[in-house]
Image 1 (cartoon, helix red, strand yellow):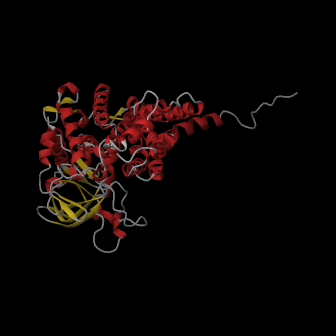
Image 2 (cartoon, one colour):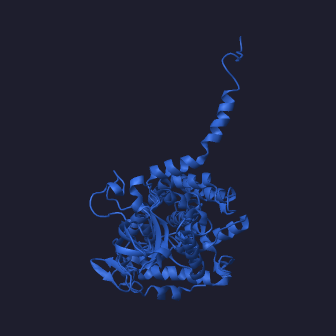
Image 3 (tube, one colour):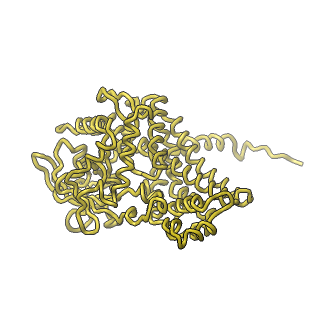
Length: 489
C-alpha cells in the first residue's frame, strides 16, 4: 500500500502549476500547497496501516488495495466501503472535498462496466480497465475537470467563436489525439497524480469534437494548471486559522496547449452519447455522489459539534430559543445522515451485479444540498453572534507581555480559559467568515452543478413520481360523481 512519503515523493516532477504569474516548481514545499499535500499524505498513511481496516483483497489485481476504490457486490462490502470513506473523511472532518477516494470511486464503477467504453476499432474498454487497475495497485490520486469554462451559458462549445475554449480534439494522429482548450474545475489537481478530463454537461450533435474522455499525468507536456488565489499562505498560524491552514484544496483551470493524448489514455473519442452513458449507465454518478454525501455528512456533524460547544461555553444552552436552534440544526444534519443510510439500504444490484446506492434517497439529499449547507452555516452564525468579532488579532496577542494579560482576563468564560475560548471561536470564524469559509459555502452550494439542474435532472427524475401517481389514479378511479352516496338529514 502506498505511504504518505511515497505520495509526496511522486509530486516532485515537471508539472506546470501557475500561480501569481509564476510557475511553481516545488508544490510539496510551496506555502500554497504544502499543508494540504501533507494532509493527503496522512490519508495514505492511515490506509497503509492494516489496523485501520481500509484494505481488502482486490480480485482485479490479485493484491491488497484501498477499500475506498472498491466496487461493492454485497451489503457487507458496501458497509466496509462506507466505513473506509468515513475513516478518511473524519481525519479531515469533511473539509477536503476532493480527496483521492472521490474520483477513484467513479473509476471503480467505470472499471466494472467496461461494456460502456467498448469501441469497434480501439481498445478503449481495455484502457479503462488498465487505468482502474493502476488506481487499485498504486492508490492513485486522480483529480478531474468535467465542466466547460464559463465562457458562455447561452450556447455549447460548438457555438463559441474563435479557437478552442473548451477542451476538444484538434486533430487525430497515429499516436493519439491532439487536444486544445480548457476545462474546469480541477480541485486538488495541483497535488494529484492524474487528471481525468471529460464533460458531464449535456452536449449536442455539433459538439462532437468536445465529447472526449481521457486521463493524463499532471506533468504531461503542454498541460498547465492555472490556480485560484490560495488561502493557506495568508493564515497567520494554525491556531488562528485551523481549517485554512490544513485543508485549503487548490482549484485550477486546466489548460491544454495542443497536448498529445496517447491512444492508451483515451476512454471515449468524440462520442456524445457515450459521454453521458459513462456516468449514468455505469452507476458512477450515484456511487461517486454517495461517497461525496458521506464526506458531507461528516462535515456537517463537525459543524454541529462546534455549534453545540459554543452554546456550552457561552452558557446559553438552556435558553429555549437556543435549544430550538440546536434542534433545528440537529434535524437538518440528521436528514442528510438518514438519506445516506437510506441510499445504502435501498441499494440494488445492476446488470453486472454491483450494488448502486438507492437513487431516490441519494438524489433527495443532493437536491437540498444547496439549501442545507447555507442553513447550517446560518444557524452557527446566529449562535456565535458577536463572539467571533471579539477575538484578538492573532495568537501573538495571547503571548505578548503587553496584550496577554488583557486577553486572558477579558476574553474568557466561566470554567473556560482564554486560550480555549479563543481557539473555539477562531475555528468557528474559519467555518463562517474567512475566505476559506466562503469558498466552502460556494463549493457545497454548487457541488453537483447549478441547484436547478440538480433538482430537475437528478432529484426529480429519480424520485419515482410515476409509482405514486399510479396509486393516486387508482384512488381517484375508485369513486365518481354517479356512484357517490350523500348523507341526508
